[in-house]
Image (cartoon, rainbow, N blue to C red; front, top):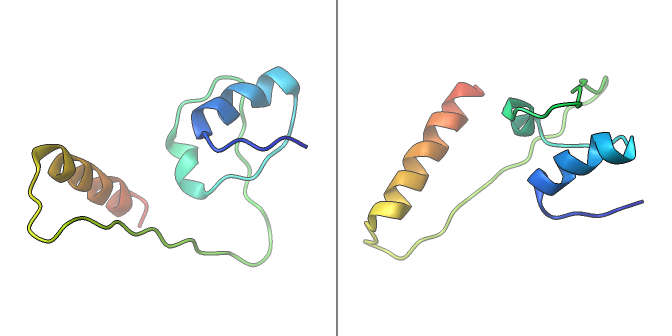
Length: 77
């Protein structure tokens, strides 16, 4: 058993080590050579994500990130 907190590293290790792992559905959008995604039959679990920022913070990088997040979120619905 291996644990990794970085999805990109995990995606690289899967074909190299010949392992099976669980990812949230959003990871399926990534291009990952040597990896096949399969659905799990049975009950579906929902994971909720949230973001915090300082009140009134309109920093351009934060705004770009939130815009990108909203686009990706809407594509999955």
